Length: 246
Ligand code: FPP
Image: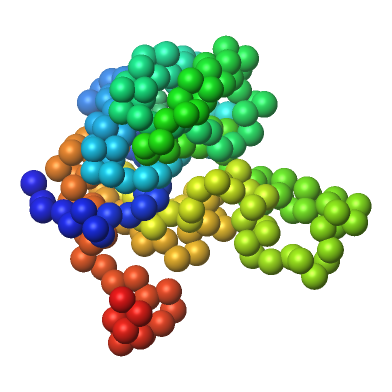
């Protein structure tokens, strides 16, 4: 296991959990078996992140495009989600984790939405890690709805035109309460962002691994974090300037 510096962990870690389907198909199993195994990885990563003291963990669980998958797979994913929430809320309470969701919740089936609302309410006073699931989430849609609200507010005279700023735009996104991610992991070898947190990842460090999500073990997780710790974040500056700022 890699030695990690507790002072240099990402404050906000975001993950695109990919490769459940391929993991299953490579083993001649149904895709849903891969998703089920993927839930075990979710448990491991949530638990480890919280133990390490990561403050914000955001997982891309279901994109706005995923609704177009075969109905049986969508239904199975929704059932998994509901079962996860029913089971894991107790563990979230034990670990002082606050649960949140980003995305268009109105698209979710009613029973899933109720389970989401319940988990949010139950964990709302917890002060430890914030676990956010992106559900029915698409970044362009998020930016579009933020701009619509912003334009309406400006036209209604509620926000003066000269008050527009990057921070103001951020405050209209689903992630208004969450800092931008420091580190983004994508599993399964795909090197795309797939409409995830496009505005928020302007300065995020990216990490791609060939490992499929169901095989993303505690060791792989530590390896990714060690890789993050070895990097120098420059935000457009040069090394000397970054060192002087420390
Ligand atoms: C990507 O694998 C994964 C998803 C679309 C969903 C992620 C869902 C889980 C890990 C399980 C449910 C989550 C929770 C939090 C209970 P893929 O199906 O796109 O894999 P493929 O690209 O190999 O087909």
